[in-house]
Length: 204
Image (tube, rainbow, N blue to C red; front, side):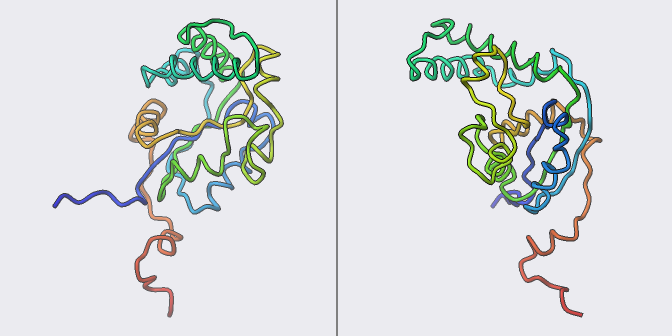
């Protein structure tokens, strides 16, 4: 029987966007993930290029179409006319806004490891739109932006963070942003409390 990897080895990508840095929330955001029990295994600050951002979003060849369909649906729900009926065109407009947003200043890219890392990070980060994100999430607590305001200003929504949406997405995105030698393997003392079956060695 083939041995599957333990959930504690799951990794996810988090990028603190330019607005997160300008709001001086880097420490607060990292602290939220650390307090959950996740292990930071990769960290760097950089100024991404427009090409790097476009490649990031197009790692999934269906992304442009899917985000375009979602945007068109959102316009129609609000009783508004979408900029185009073609989801590829609308998705292309979304990418243009994202490239402008991500390249406006430095970002902090990080890789986090731990049980159900992708799901847990998404939960604590909050929904894509800060306005409708739950209180207690990072976006719900620290941002007041909305889709309607972003659309009015013809810009990407400012929501502080990008977090991978699935395990497969995380694997592809981590490879896009980090080389293997930029990810550090090390033992974190608290992992004994989180994952050790019998909590051996706690008593003297």
